[in-house]
Length: 274
Image (cartoon, rainbow, N blue to C red; front, side):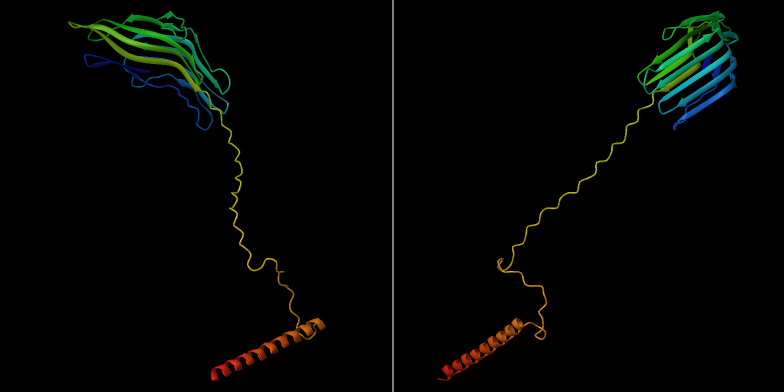
């Protein structure tokens, strides 16, 4: 309820209350409340009675839903009975796959004591009744009841009864007043279709980047020469006869080289002396 009206600066109607509310947990699950007495603490010019039988909201991976139910409702404004109902309900369902749904029901719904039948998403039903308001002559309370059942690709909304109130009358010796009073919502439910989870893509293993081929260094020396033997050179003792002759040959070459060198030195000196 959200009602407020003043005449000549004096409040004549005040009612601000939410009786029964539920919001599904963000992480999933259900929130609900039951058996709540309908009262309006601090209200002025407004009285109400009845029971909020249940309000509930559920969030899941594959569907969400909500519902509200009111029983034995009686709402009066400025001493006049405005809305009465045995049962009022609203329910919505939002599956991840499939159609979203919104439904409302009424049993014994009356406006100013007259039975009414509300059709979803129409201008609704309007009626008025005379009321007494200090400072006004010919005061009248005008009420329009509407019903909402809407669905979209992403959600659903159901409002069983939405009452819009206006107060009209004439100030003594003054103009006709048309004062918006506010709204009363009886049994409302909303839901949203759960988003489909996107599967996590499988990571493709990263192939190692091939290292650039290093140029092959040009071989040093004569490539036709055989590689030096890795076998250790045997000492003279214990070697074969071939190795012994090789040793003598080397020694002989050294001796010859040495003798030749001395002969060259002597010849050089002789040339210089001459």
